[in-house]
Structures are given as C-alpha cells and as structure tokens.
Length: 141
Image (cartoon, rainbow, N blue to C red; front, side, top):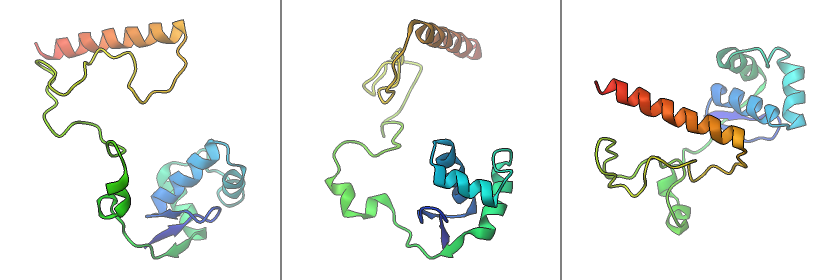
C-alpha cells in the first residue's frame, strides 16, 4: 500500500513520504507540485511534516505497490560500482588508528560533492574542519 502523488503519480510508501515528495519537489522549482500544494494545503510552507502528511493524505489516491528491494532486481547485478547510499566499507571504520579503508579524513570535500568553492567557502570549510578536530580531541580526554 502507498499513495500516488496527485501531481506526477510517483509512488510513495506512506503519507509522510508523499508530503516530503510534494514539498521538496515544489521547493526545487516544480510549478505543478507547488500549485497543487497552494491549492490543497495553503499553509504547506509553514506546516511540519506531520501536519502536511495529514493534509495530503485526504487528497491522494491510496494504491497498492509491490515492495521491491534493490538487491532482488536484475539491475543490481548489471550496475558497476558501489550501491547508492553506501556510507562505509564493510570492513571496520576505525578513527583512532591507521585508516585501513582506503581514504584519509583530511579530504577537502567528499568525493560526491560537485561544488565550485570560492576562497570564502574554503576558509569556512577549513575552520569547520579545525573546530571538528578540536571537538573530537576534547571528547577523548
């Protein structure tokens, strides 16, 4: 069971996911999703997730969708590289000693970051890294 998005018919597992889908898509500039929210949930921009979910549930069609897991589809075997959302290697992720997992923690940006970084941004990131190191050092004491 789930809900079909009333704008684009994308399946959503529950009303909370539907509310998030509608709001995020509207915020990202989709005029159809924004117009639907303006018409059916005029306070959507100020509502929390729970309130918006209760509102959109009233207008969305409940549908039956098959539960599909990524590792049960043929597509997984054909895909190269790691699975999306894979945060850590399966082997340990120790922070106290040598880094056996193939990367250092002094990277400038995560490898997936696709940003144009100016000097001000780089300075803020450097300061954040330094403060994080200090904070982690203080917690060991």
